[in-house]
Amino acid sequence: MKKTPYSHLPDYCFWQRSVSAIAPQALDPVVTVPFTIATTDKIATAGSCFAQHIARYLRNTGFHFLITEPAHPIASADDALLYNYGTFTARYGNLYTARQLVQLFQRAYGLFSPAETVWQGDNGEFIDPFRPQIQPNGFSSLAEFNADRTKHLRAVRTAFETLDVFVFTLGLTEGWESKDDGAVFPLCPGVAGGVYDENKYQLHNFDVSEVVQDVLTFIELLTQLNTHAKIILTVSPVPLIATALSDRHVLSATTYSKSVLRVACETICRQSAVAAYFPSYEIITGHYARGGYFAEDCRSVTEAGVAHVMRVFLKHFAGMELDVSATVDAVSQEKQLSDKHLQEMAELVRINCDEEAIDKRFIPAEKNIQTGRKKNSLASIFKQWRK
Image 1 (cartoon, rainbow, N blue to C red):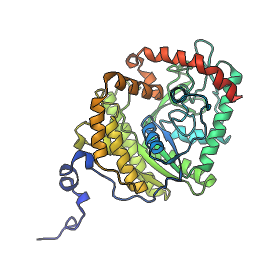
Image 2 (cartoon, one colour):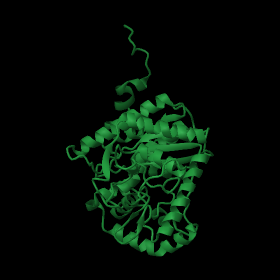
Image 3 (cartoon, rainbow, N blue to C red):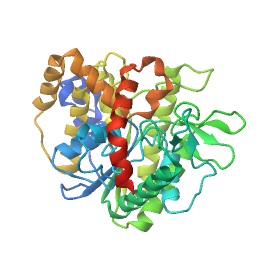
Image 4 (spheres, helix red, strand yellow):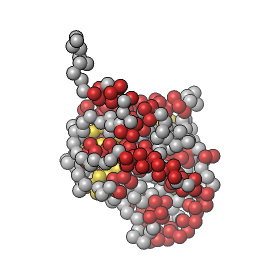
């Protein structure tokens, strides 16, 4: 038999041997990782909505999920979640783009002072342009807003200075920025606060070189401050809920965004010794799963999909061998959940996903009712605590 460059390659280099011949729940696309993590490592997370799943699994499997901005001790778990405490390491909400991440660091350390610091809502409430949905119904006074922002940025600094591992999930390339100073917001002004003005704001669809430069800039800033920090990059498999590009279908826009982010991650990891890529995007979207890891909306990731991602993640980064049946059990359990419980789970994700606010027609009215009720019982507690 003639020898070729393929003759002695391992099985994982061949589709038939490592994909189509493998049970979907057992597929493992990770070959090697540049470093490992321990349960004692302080792990911080940030990014898009999918990053919330990673945080949840780390917390529930005994890892030191770093929280530098906790809720008040008397708040229930549901109430804390509603106010975005514990969703990520600090209460910064969704950081969909790499530019948001860089600017968060710069704002926390006084390296960037945006021209716009606060928005006002229809009822006079005060809203943080960079965290427009972390506070149900906004802040009641400017003093309360300023106190919370000061406390928040202090928590962000603590996170960057004390973390051992930073897991960042890139979600989007489309972002809305100020024409005045380039400040990038998680949502278009006018969607959840502020007023849209085409003379003040513009859409920016980041390309590969911009994403690479932003992440490398962040890594340089972080590692100058925290010399032992390591970074794990992932790409969210969740499609765009909408595109602001009127000449492009949302499916094509999604493909562009995810392609840019995936290529950017590859480039970054080749250039940075402290960065690693984990293929959560490939595990969820790979057609080997035949769409089985998406819910009926073709967008939300099922619990079975999350379980598969985290089983592979923990195996390679932490040396934790979880039985494949855990993923299979997740599928079985998910099918047994009542429709009511599934709706409750989906609602919790919506509450903590800024992007959902773009298309309000698909958000149940019950969310607003619940949010208002919770605010009445908790606003005074959080207001006093922030003082």
